[in-house]
Amino acid sequence: MRFSVQQIKYDFLYAIKEFDSDGTRWGVVTSPVPPSETLSRMGFDVADFIYLGKPAGTPRAAEIVKAFFIQRFGTVDSGQLEAEGTAEWVILFRSKESLPSKADLLEPLNSVGD
Image (cartoon, rainbow, N blue to C red; front, side, top):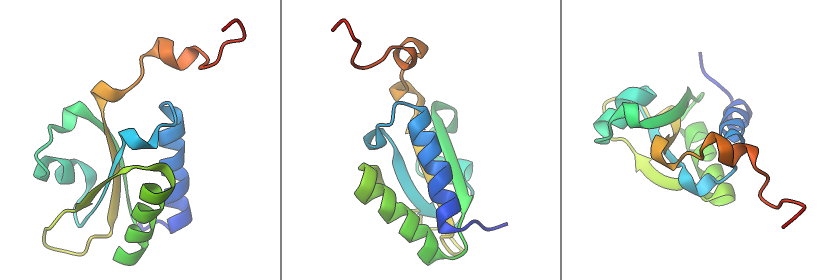
C-alpha cells in the first residue's frame, strides 16, 4: 500500500504535535527500505528511537514530504539512504532521550501564575 503526500503529512504532523511540537528534534530521511532497517543501516540502535515511516506513491512524492518538514518545521535533513531500490519510503524519527517527560507534557508552557 502506498500513501499520498497529504496522508503522510497528516500522520507526521500528528506525531510531531504529540511530542511537544518541536520539529527540530526530529530527523527525516528517504529510503528504499522500511524504517527499522533504514535506521539500522544508518548506524542507529532502533530501540533508542521512535519513528514513523510511510511508503509514498513515488520517490518524488517522498522528497516532497521530506522537503515540507525540513522547510516548515525545521526537521533535520538526514539525507537519503543509499540502497538497492527506489527511495519511496519517507521516515520521521527522533531519539527517545529527547522526548519530554510525562510531567512536561501535562504542564502548560505559560502558566497563568507565571
